[in-house]
Length: 138
Image (cartoon, rainbow, N blue to C red; front, side, top):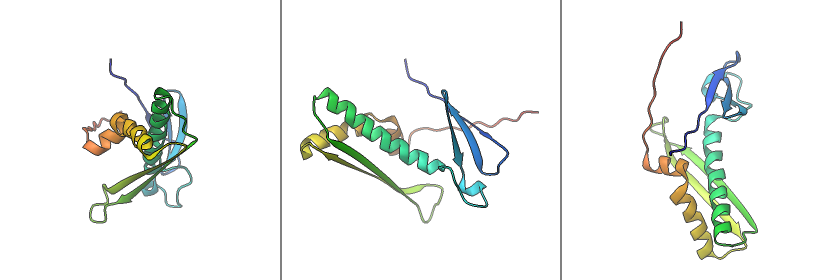
């Protein structure tokens, strides 16, 4: 059975600030386009980049356990650049993973587990399907 996740966002009476609930987790997000006085909470891009970084590290740790390999430390840095000619998309998303305590070959195998299995990475990489529906409430 396919795993389904859900997130719900709602306005909270402060322009550009939203309350998000996702399966019992509650957090706040700001939108730069909706806030006149700058953002305080993470913006959607921050959550996307953070999700990629966490997915990378979680996948590396899981595969390291499977292979009975000890990774002393692991870091993931994710950077995005907006497309200058089309600001509705990213021109580039770069993921840099730094592992210590393993060889380059093992590090590449561990990171390959991430690139082969992370649904967020693979949806972005492949340009996966996405849809939007709109309705109104009286």
